[in-house]
Image (cartoon, rainbow, N blue to C red; front, side, top):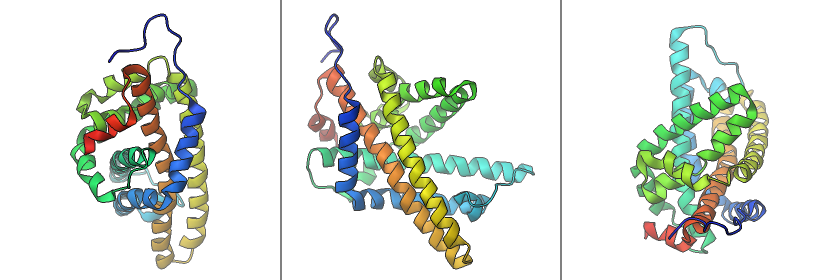
Length: 260
């Protein structure tokens, strides 16, 4: 297998097709996507709620940064969110390939591979988040470019067991395709943000009912926000598969075979 042959026209990433496939997988397997993402998301919100308060974790109350203890709690809450995102991504990457190949979605089978890669995946997710944040601090465009460079780090870690080499692997795969990837990711982030805003609005209304409302709000927010995160994770999985196909001639069924 080799990279794109010198002198040949560069193959198109096919952003429109990838986004369309992502919506198709999400809608056809909506319940499974919600189930896969719901459990880690719910645990994440519960831990964050215990650390900083449930209103603050849901975003319906302003966070307190007045003392050293509250700053530590908020930092820990962010780290918990990143770990949860890593686990959810690792689970949904596998679901995406089974769905694309029209194979049965086997939820129980996904947890072993996901948990076995969670340490490098979580650490690298934190690293990428920091790098993207630095890029965003200068201007939005550099932040998006950095995000695109490392966009397929998660599938590389989960599928190829790249470990801490996931960053360099993503850097190689995304080369020459970073701006189309950035465009696709912006669309996914917009969709996820809209869903999160809807979730916050609904949760804000329900949480006003008191303690029981807060509990219901946490569960609802975990469920609704999972849809946005699921869309992004599925899109990233399909982008990774497309890049492997273009650069290395590897098909989706060959990629998915590592879990058989």
